[in-house]
Each structure stands twice: as C-alpha cells, then as structure tokens.
Image (cartoon, rainbow over all chains, first blue to last red):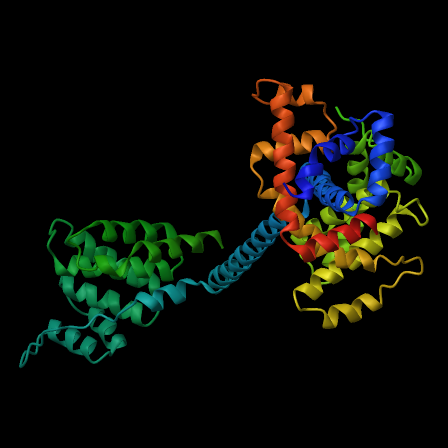
Length: 256
Length: 201
C-alpha cells in the first residue's frame, strides 16, 4: 500500500468535515510534520477542487444558455439581419426591375400611335398576275396600280364601270395617297360585294386593309373588331398579321 | 415570473461569496456586463461565439476568485471583469497565433483602473486541461462528486437521486471516483504542479 492510499480514509474524513474536533486537531498536527501525508492530502485536494470548478463551470454554462436565449443572443439576431438584408436586397432589385419595366412600358405607351402601328403592319398590296397585250380598262387600272400611279388609278376609276377588283385597287390607291375615308368606303364596297364568297382572296385582302384603314383613321373600335375577327378566323389569309399582342396595343390607343 | 433584480457590486459579491442566490448573481452579471464585454471581444476581431465563450470563462474565474476572497471589491466589478475579459481574449488570440495587430489595438484600450490579472492567463490552459479530465469520468462519478463537493448535498440526499442500496455504497463509490480523478490528474506531474500553484497561490 503506497502512502497516498494508506492515508486516504482519514484524508477523506478530514476533507469531508467528518472528524471530531479532537481528530481534526490531531490530523492537522501530523499534516504539519508528515510530508507524505501532506503530499497525499494535496493530491486529493486537487481532485476535490477540480470537481468544484467543474460544478461551477456546468452551472455557469447552464445559466449562459438560458441568458443567451432570454436576451435573444446576437447570433440569431444576426441571422435575422441577414434575412432582412436579403429581403431588402431582393425588394430593391424587384423594385428596380419594376421601375425599369414601368419606364419601358410608359415609353412604349407614350410613343404608341396609330401611324406607328399602321406602318409596322402595312405591306403594300402587289398584283401577282399581268395581262400582257390587253388594252382593256381593267388592265389599265391594274397597270397603273402596278406602276404605283395611284392618282391614275383613281382617275380611271371615275370613267369606268368597275369590277370588284378595280374597286379594291381604287381603295388601295386611296390608302396609298392617304385619303383614308375614301379608301374605307371602297374597301367596304368590296367586302359587301364578296361577302358570300368565303374563300375569296380579295375579301381577305380587303378586310386586312380595311382594318388598317380604320386604325389609320382612328376608328379603334372598328379596327379592333375586324382585327379580332381576322385573328380568330383560322382560314383567313391574313390571320398571322394580327396577333394578340398587336391587337392589345391597338386597344391601348383607346386609353390615350 | 422571475423577478429581475439589479444587484449593486457589494450585494453581488456577497451573494457569490456566501453561495446563496448564486444563480441570481450570475444572471445579474450577465445582464449587466455581457453586452459590453461581448463588444470588447467582437471589436477586436472576435466572433459572437468567441465573446460568449470568453465571457463564460471569465464568469467562472470571477466567481472562483470572489469565493476564495481574492477579489474584495478593490475596483468595480465592471472594471475587474473588463480586465479579465481583455486578458483572457488576448491570451486566446496569442494561442491562435494572431497576436500582432490585436495586441497593438489592445494597447489603445488600456484602462486607468486596469488591474494586474496576467497571472490568471498562465493558469488558463491548466484549468481547461483539468476540466477535460473531469469530463472523462463516468456520468455517475461526475454526478456523485458534483453533488457532494459542489452542491454540498448530504449522502442521504445523493442516495435519493441515485439507484444505490445505501449510503455506504454511495460513500464507497464517491471515494473510488475521487481517487480515480486524483490519479488521472497526478499522472501529469507538470499539470499537477501548475494546479497546486493555483490552489495555494
């Protein structure tokens, strides 16, 4: 048995305050002179103090957790801060994008005009067939139209008995020289004449140009109605000319 | 609902010294001083976690010093905690090998009332080491020893908390546990000597 173990029982009783006063005095006397006892006592005392420190550390640790929770320690606050920062950043980006969108749309709305929409969509009507060698009135109108001599077309119109096609070309000529009212009248005549001919190429062309003529003449309701009808007619030759976006832009003109 | 009482320095020291109302005293220290001490650490390149760890360590050391009558209110508690926090954090920075710039910054923070607590820094590692050793004990050992030596519970009270036949069995267990701990500590002579210096210093 080494010294430390030999002394353990009485050291424990001394440390745990279980000795009588007499035993205690006797023990302390020996402690002052017995180096081995002193050493053994000192070592066990270290272990006891270590336990006390450990107990205190555990207590403080428990209260620390409680206090951090109570005060809403900065770590979660930081996290909230980060979330807030991200939200703020996102809102700022979204607001910027929205602002840019509004500015662009505003600019588009401001610069929107019937003339602009008309020009975007208008394609001059071109005759695809020629009547070589013919000297008829019709051929003269067609020839004049092909040569883009629109005033000649209109002049010939006044002196002739006209076919539906001639009326159409006359309407187109009025459109070319910006006499929109007369263009509308002629095109309406064409449509009325061929209304029962559902497969008429001329009818589809007349409707297309009449819709544009209404637009140019600021007759938005009539333009929208006709454009929508063309768009909704799957067999219409000019269906592709009036998509929803284009029709919506025409509708916007009404709000200006 | 818990009543929050702000303790004056004298009341605080008395509560710690006497061990009565120690929980309330520790909470008071946290409420009154954690914010400024955390600022001190974070303002010197520490994180929130660093601030919490350092303050926890400082509070433990502060209580031990008060209970051993090594601090009797010569300066204000705040000044004392400031010095301890500053030195503990400086020590930690040194340990991390990042002392250069921080030390310079600390020089600017010198307090007229600053106390010499540098001796505490040398003890820091030994204390950590011994805490690790205690942690290595079995759970039952830790419970018995802490209940007896820290919470000052009687053998009878400890018996009520543990599944042992009688007090004598608990007493024997307590002896074996303390003996085991003693042997674990004294197996490192250098650590033993440092701890003895702390204990008797």
